[in-house]
Length: 140
Image 1 (tube, one colour):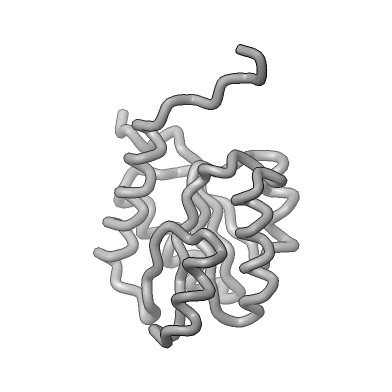
Image 2 (cartoon, rainbow, N blue to C red; image 1 turned 90 degrees about the vertical axis):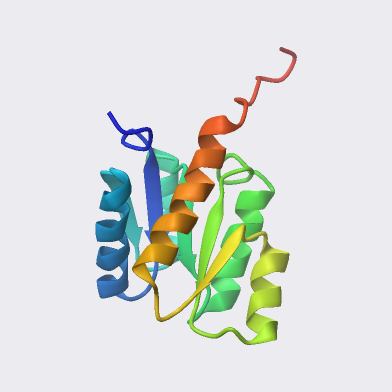
């Protein structure tokens, strides 16, 4: 069994074709449990039902909604604040990249997407998830 086969990934992008492409690329890492959402609002119930080990989120379109979504993750309001976020940006413009970094995105990939870059970045972030110690309950 592959080290990533039991992990869950959430892909948040308005473009259904991009979501499916990323899900297909994640198959190269043996990730079978990929959930898709068209925007952060649609992602909320998916997070509550099945917390992901990695979130891949588009930083273009309604970037404000995505930035607020990532801030809530980083504050631990939605799930483990350490959950890695891989941002997708249609622009390598400095302001877009800075906004993504300030929101707490771990890595950013520019669109158009490179299959190798998606696989390598997702794999690297998930390897870090597997290496980190679990969160201990308060008072433990």
